Structures are given as C-alpha cells and as structure tokens.
Amino acid sequence: MNKLNINLDEKKEKINKNIYGHFAEHLGRCIYEGFWVGEDSEIPNQNGIRTDVVEALKAIDIPVLRWPGGCFADEYHWKDGVGPREERATIVNTHWGNVTENNHFGTHEFMELCDLLDAEPYISGNVGSGAIREMQEWVDYITHNGESPMSDWRKENGREEPWPLKYFGVGNENWGCGGNMRPEYYADQYRNYQTYVRSHGDNEIFKIACGANVDDYNWTEVLMKNAASQMDGLSLHYYTVPGDFWEGKGSATDFKEDEWFITLKKALKMDELIKKHGAIMDQYDPEKRIAMIVDEWGAWYDVEPGTNPGFLYQQNTLRDALIAGVTLNIFNQHADRVKMANIAQTNNVLQAMILTDEEDMILTPSYHVFEMYKVHQDADLLHFDLESENYKFEDQEIPALNASASVNEAGEVNITVCNLDPNKEIELDTNLFADKLNLSQVKARVLTADKLNAHNSFENPENLKPQELKAVELADNQLKAKLPAASVTLITLN
Ligand code: AHR
Image (tube, rainbow, N blue to C red):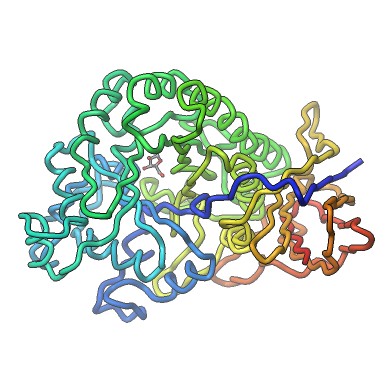
C-alpha cells in the first residue's frame, strides 16, 4: 500500500540550498535579544551579537538570511542605523508593538551577523515609505567599490571594503503593509525603483519583486506581464493558520487532533500555490529564469498567553516539525522554480528555530527538522513515485505520507519522509532502481513524540530531538522502514 519507487539514475535539478533560508525582522525579540545583545551584555557575544544563537544556526548551515522585514522594511530608514551607535536616531516600530528602537542593529551589524553565520545577506528595501534615492544609496553604501559619497561614508563608519550583496528585495507585501498598492501600480513602482538598484563592479544584484499574498493569482499575472524582464525573482508569502487570521488563529500548544489535521492540510496547500503561481510564471517565463522566492512561510498561531500581542511569540511543537518537514519536501519537489525560501522567523517570532529567555536558549522541533534536512542543500533532486494511504479525520482525508529524496556529490541518497497520521505507524517499502546500484548501508533518524503538542521548554529543553530509527532494513535494493505515527524521518543510504 505504501510504496516509494526511486530511480537513482533520474536526477532532476539541484535543490538550491537557499530553500533552507531564514528571515529575521525587527519584530518582538527576533533581532533585539534574539541576535543583538550589545557589546556590554553579560550574555556571551561577539561585537554585540550573541554567540550561542550564531553557533546554533551555523550547525544547521543557514544559507541566507532576509532582513530587516517584513512590514518593518517599508518603514525602515537605513541611514538612521549607521554611524556611532550612541548618535543614531530612534525609530518607533509601528507594526510590531509600537516599541521605540534605538537602531543599534543596522547595516554594519547585519552584515557582520551574516559573516559570522557564513550566510548570504538578503536585504528588503523600502518602497512603501522610502524614496528611490534612499534605496539606491543603500545599495551604493554596501557595494560601491571606489570613490563615491556613499562608499566614503561607509569607510568613515569603519568599513573599508564593500560587502558582497546579492539578494535585494524591492519592497515587501506592497499589496498590504508595504503601501496597499494595486498590482498595476506596484509593477510600475517596481520598474522605477529597480532601475536604480545598481550592480557595482563584479557585485551582481539579484532583484526580487514583491509577489502575491497566498492565492492572489492576479498579482502574479500582472507582475509577470508588466515587469518580468526587470526581475530575477518574484516572491510568495503563505502562512499556515489553523483557525481564522483575525478571529482567532488557534493555540500553538493547546490543540487536539482536529486542529492537527486542519493545520497539516493547510500546510499541504503550499504545493497547490506553487503549482498555480508557477503555471502563470511559465506562461511568461517558460525557461524558468525567474526564481520563485517564498520569502515568508510558516505557522502563525495566537501569541503565548501573557506576551505582547505585537511580538508574535509562539511555542513550537511536534506539529510545527511536521509543517516544516512537509513544506521543505514540497519546496524540494519544486526545485526547478523555487530557488529560495525563508521561514518566519529565526528567533522568538512565529515558527522560530530558537527561543531565548535572556541568557537561556532552546532549540525548537522546527530547528531539528532544518538540521535533519540540511543534507538536501545543493544535492540533486531524485525523481520518485510515492503511493500513500490516506490519513482520515472525520469526513476528510489527506495523504498520510509526504516525501522528497536527493543524492549528493558523494553518492549518498537521502530520503526525508513525514508520516502525518498521528494514530498509525506506517510501513514504507521502497524500491531503488539504477543501472549500477552499490548502496549497502542504511541509517535513519526520526523526530517524533507520543503527544502531538510535545515541545521543548526552558525547563525541559531536550524533550524533543531526533533519535535513531532502528526499524529500517536494506536488502537487495529494497528498503523497508517503519515510520512512527506523527513523525519526520531522514533515511540515509550509501
Ligand atoms: O512575519 C510577520 C509579518 O508577516 C511580516 O512582517 C509581514 O511581511 C507578514 O505579513
């Protein structure tokens, strides 16, 4: 019944490592406390950036980091965030709790963070409330190698060499918090702004246009029709919300099987969105030159009781691990069009990798999925056929299994498979085909728990982490695995 046929000779495209990207906004405690503690903090730090968080993120090979927003991006004025820290202007973060920020984390600090993480920076510029000149000067400040007002100012502020900067977003959610624009108007704005986002020397900027909200296919159509030739990437935002976004999204930890089911069903919608937006992109760009960049995704619940509603702090359970596992499998399967994705958000906000409480830090189940799945980064996607039984809940059903597979340069095959059914262990039979097959070893790790809302806490930080899965066997090119109920599994063959 549950069968996977993998043809090892049928390699598809490379899975761009940037699919495993992250997003850090000036929102709640993502940047301040999550990354930035300041040089005088007792929390161990390098030039103000906390060391424990950097080390943890390096361990999952974070490839790219998007900053400074989100909605914050279209209200951010970068010039306020450079120069001596004590002289920087403050900014009121109107979207997120109306808190006043001191701008101590700005361009230099972000670029240093990316250096420490060994991650590519992805900056979102301000279209909604910023000027074209401001955007142009930001790119010049960062990348201009020579004499210019902006590169001179950068040098005065302590950075001699320009920084390499590839990814630049021209606005964020300009259909909403980024200016409430119509697609026709934004397409023209995009064309105008991007003209002045210049590549200097050998620094080639990859320009990303603001894409659709969820299933607004008209937005994609209008952007592709009017601005395709001026963009390298088009974004897409989709959050998994079990309830209603405005009436009550649902609790991160206090839920039963009905919300487990509906949440995972909604997570699977990512596949449909990519297919449908992708089909529109194909009409204008059959060569698939333009990347689909899913630069915001993840679970969005009600905030943890007693926390600031504007800070979007939520716990992270086994359910989130499944959302991450399913969504990353979907991105892998669409590696021909999806070239980057950025889960929201890195620390303390929405579907976070890391939660901090002053000097303490814990890793979430979602973090562990990114750690397990990092083997897919830059590997070749393998074609397969998956036959799966359905997971039924009341009168609805969804496929119980969801998977992706890749082969890396060393010839190691990695299969990631999620069992969405919380009530049933599933035995999966896999046939491996290839002209020459010399895989003889198998090992597997699994993330699972008895309780659907199992999570890590500051009292019990290692409650949920990957364990060895013993129930796997490889003989005569047949792989058998028993996948626990409600689990994310990585099977490695070599
Ligand atoms: O990630 C939180 C917010 O969600 C972002 O600021 C915005 O772009 C989106 O609506």
